Image 1 (cartoon, each protein chain N blue to C red):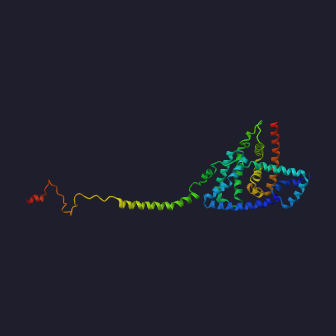
Image 2: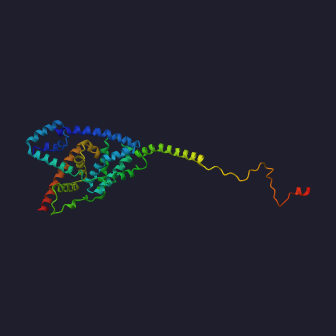
Image 3: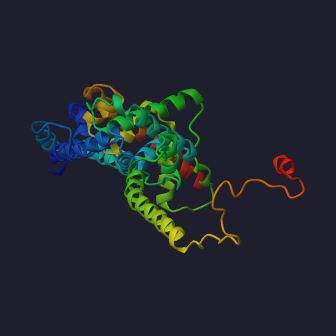
Amino acid sequence: MTCRLFENQLSPYLDGELAATRSARLEAHLRVCTYCQAELTAMRQVASHIQAISGEVQPSRDFDRRVLRAVGYYQVTGRQARRRRALARPLAAVIVMLLGLLTLARHYLAPPPAQPLMPAPQSAAVVAPASPGLPLPADHDRR
Amino acid sequence: MEEALRPQIGLLRERAELRADADLVSACIAGDGDAFRELLSRYRKSALALAYQMLGNADDAEDISQDAFVKVFQALPCFRREAAFSTWLYRIVTNLCLARIRRNRAPVALDSVGELRSGEDPSRRVTEALLTRQVLSQMAPELRAILLLRDQLGLSYREISSTIMVPVGTVRSRLSKARAVFRGLWHEATVLEEAARA
């Protein structure tokens, strides 16, 4: 069969992987050779059968989650980390303001300290301990 | 004309993707988790489809493709960028599938070939899809891989060469052989299928 030379070129021709000069020669041959035409058509059908089943399977819903968990993505990375950083400053400011308000509120709104019923003693001498039932020995001697 | 232009179009597309993927890979290495997420979203479907047609089972395919992404992530700092990210990923998927097939040594279990029963009249599209998967499962894993890389994922000979680590000349001859084997098995399967229907 004189087509043997061209037969080996059909597959790369179909894939667009044949040099331009060889492609031109093959195309000229294809115009007159029904055998090679049929071969090329059959090869196209193979490609078409394979392409027809390429979308048969879809990734499961948790495909990404499983992979990302396995690689430790959920340990605060990427967007999540940026989001957290973006929230951190306003949150800190709010906490500081609340603490400030709380301190002020405690200062101004707290009840005044309770007034003592008896006036406070003036000096230490006045407050000297004097048990009523037991006179001091000095007083007793003076009498 | 269209076939003659395909290598140039493929090369341009490959370069554009290479740049974009390379940026994502760099971001990933720098610790940007979102970049990996983007790569995952870009390639999960094709990685899964390749694994599915290699193994014929959706659960195994999901395991293998997830495992491939985890391996990719762990090896990212060592990625030498001699090939495109996609080529590297498909290499890992293909190798994992071939290893799984070698380990099991059992014929590929097809998920839904059992749906094709004699007496039923499924549509031609469904029948052909089932036959295609049956034929693929009967092919040698290496031939199946090269056929899927070309006809399912549309990789160029150069990309296939870096994916399965063989010279471009070998890709060319192996692909021709794979197509011839597919056609032979397809012919047998359709004859048997027609006999069963008759």
